[in-house]
Image (cartoon, rainbow, N blue to C red; front, side, top):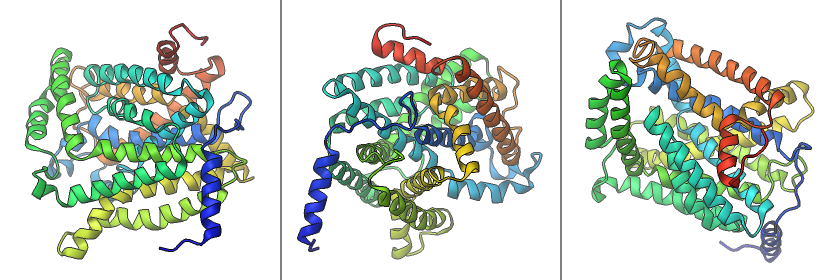
Length: 411
C-alpha cells in the first residue's frame, strides 16, 4: 500500500509526540479520570453476569436439567443474548482498561515505572493466588499478574508499536486456532481439565470447606492449563497493549486531541464486532468460508466489541446530557474500587451457593441469576458510594498499595 508523504509525516509526528511523557490533564481534582473508573464499574457488572453462572453451578448443569428450574422459560434466549453481548467481551474490556491504567501510571512515574510495575504485579500475583485457592479457581487476577510481567517491556513504547504488537498477537491467535488440530492443540476443554472439573464439582456442590480447598488447588492448575491451551494469555496481552496505546494518546481525557480515534473505534468496534459475535454463536463450520469467518470471529469479535463499548460510552459520557453524566458518576465508585468489588463477588457467592454455605448450587435458572446479579450490582453501587464517602480507596486497593509502597498508606 502506498501512503502519501504528508500522511507519513503526520503519523511520525504524532508517534513522536505521544511517545513523550504527557502532561497530566485529569478529569478530577484528585487526579482520577472518571470515565476510566466508570468503564471499570461497567466491566465489573458484565463479569458478574458471566461468573455468577459458574458460582451457582448453572454452567455445569446439562441442558435437560436446566428446563426444570424456576423461571427457566426465558433462559434460552437470555443465554444467546449474553453469549453475543457479554461472554468474553467484558474480560476483554477489563483487560483493555488494565493496560490503560498501567501505561498511564508509567507515564506519570517516569524512570522508575518498570520497577514499580513489577512490584504491583508481584502483589497482584499473591492476591490472585490467594483468591484462586481460598475462594474461586477461575480467578483472572493470577493470569493478569503473569501476563502483566510481559507488559513491563512495553510500558514506554509508542502507540503505533503497541497497536502493531497487539494486531500481531491476535493474528497469531487466529492462525494457531485454525491450525490447532494439526499442531496437536485441544479444541475446547482438554481431557485433563475436563477430568479435574468432573472430579471437583461434587466438592463444590456439597463438600466441606477443606474439600473445597482441595478441589480449588486442582482446579487452579487445570483452569490455567485450559486458558493457556485456549491462547487466553495472548488475547489478554493484546488487550493490555491496545489499552496502553489508548493511554499514550490520552483517549479518555476530556480534552483529548485525537477524538476522531474514539469515533472510529466506536463505529468500527460495534459495526464489525457485533456481527462477528453473532456469527460466532449462530454460524456452523460447514464450509471453508464459514470456518474462516469463525476464526476471525474467535480472534477479533470480543476485542472489537469491547473496544466499541468503551469508545461509545466515553463519547456518550463526555456529552452534556445530564442523565449520561449521572450514569458515569454512579458507576465510577464501583470502578474506583474494582479490585475489591471483583473479589466481593466470590466472597458473597461462594458461601451463598456452595455446599458448605447455603447450598444453593445448581438450583437457580439463568433468568433468576441475572436478576440476582442486578440486585447484587445495585448493592455494590450503593456500598461503593458509602465506602468512598468515608475512605479514599477500597480496602483491597489499600492493602495492595501498602505492599507496593512498603509502608502503610492513609486510608
